Length: 510
Image (cartoon, rainbow, N blue to C red; front, top):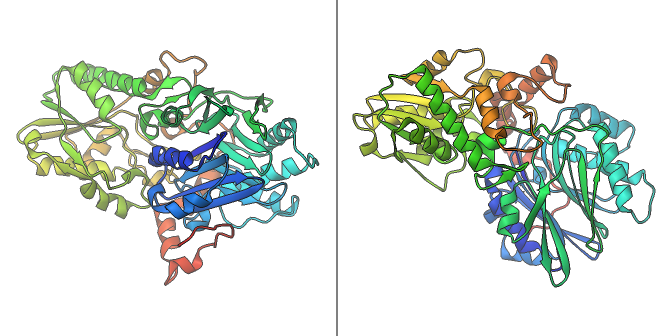
């Protein structure tokens, strides 16, 4: 779940790309990077950390050019470190940079083929570098000194045939243009917009529409699954469907948690989706516990706030802000390990005791994944004087790993896996717990939409849309990406930085 942006304009784009990454910062806090292009030269700055810490004035001054791409990283597959910061670069053909949001499910197979058949070297264990090299190889096969839009689209079509999984991509071909494309199921979001200037039409592509709104672009639409976009060196826009078969099956977790509520994804309002989630969750409470004794509804900031508001209104119960959030602590869900997540909860939130003392409190969260945060927050509510603490999740129980770009690799680390709702409630310390029904979640996200009749819901139902995920794949994923494996990679040397792959294309000043 990374954030990507690409801009082709009539003037310098460096500050606009930086602004875009700060808007997308919620999608990844591990690393950030920008590449711009001017007169065939690519200029890059990337590093680990938040965008505000990676880019300094001296760096921005060197990011010259009217075209560029940016990326904020949320690590799922692979390691962590400066070399994993995106965009990635290959010099052949032409010089290509790429930023990727998602995860390939056949990256191991592709990695072997890239080495043995394509004769290309991979410098990291990132599936994004795999995707870049596949695209670069397919573009090179076109055999043109000057690539045409048709050549780019042919390369994308060939990439679709080789790559399986989720990918929303933006990239640059030095001297020639900006490209973007989306996987054949449209699992990860990608939209584009236009802005009129004295230099003509300017175009931007981003993970969320809020980026386009903030930068003054008019949102045109989302890229269709399998569709590619190319803005050539003259600033002309080209669009083409590049997949033989495609079907829009977007990730529903975008509406549950990841996306900002002021974004539109596949022409669906994230804000309205979350309102409907709260309404449907309240209706379930009224069905299953008509004699409830809830005194107050309290959201767990920030992503559950909209659902909690709608839930309180439907129940006819007061909504109160019972937790104050420290804005300088990152999203605990995407922190790398249980220990760090647990420690950060109390750093991140502080209870307003007056809203808890002697009350029966309904806490509302967007989802319950590992249960670490929920258990700590429930205990905080009790420490603040709550008489009873109930827990509501705007999403169903997360029971299966995610393989499409969300860090839920191990079923054993998911608290709802193999457990009943009551058992989960007991473990996290709630007096009782209530989950959203999957049908209600889908209905809440799909209501009023056009063209979306199915969502990628594998974390809830174990049904993987790409059709290539089996028990052996999940077992291998668990062994390589669970919290213990991550900890081993991070502490395996006296100085972990000595074991990191060195980024070979980075001109960031220190």
